[in-house]
Image (tube, rainbow, N blue to C red):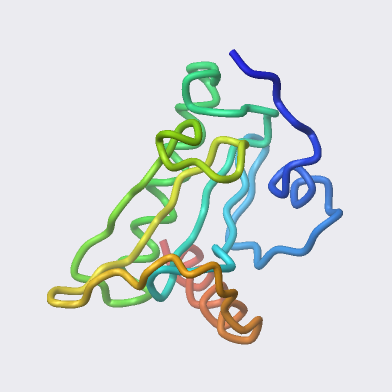
Length: 142
């Protein structure tokens, strides 16, 4: 098992050292907008614990992270009138992981519309803020 790096971008977000468009947070998890979205409403859920990959996570961290993932996914489907939701979770470089803090991608999907390519280009802050507000409103509505 590789060592957790507390300087990773998600650890910095959790400590308030980097900004994020927050959607939801509780004692165990934190959900926010992906700054390089592959679909409108693309969100991330992370555990608050310093967990590098799903393979390193405790059953409790996995349960909390996926309970929040389900909650945010339901809200995303409603908020964006999506036909479906793609959930992605990558582990290690060979598995596609780029940030080494366990995280889950929630991507609203629509019939006939492909995911945008991952270009590394950041979305405008006002778009992310607007999408975060839509998700927060959907979460509040239940």
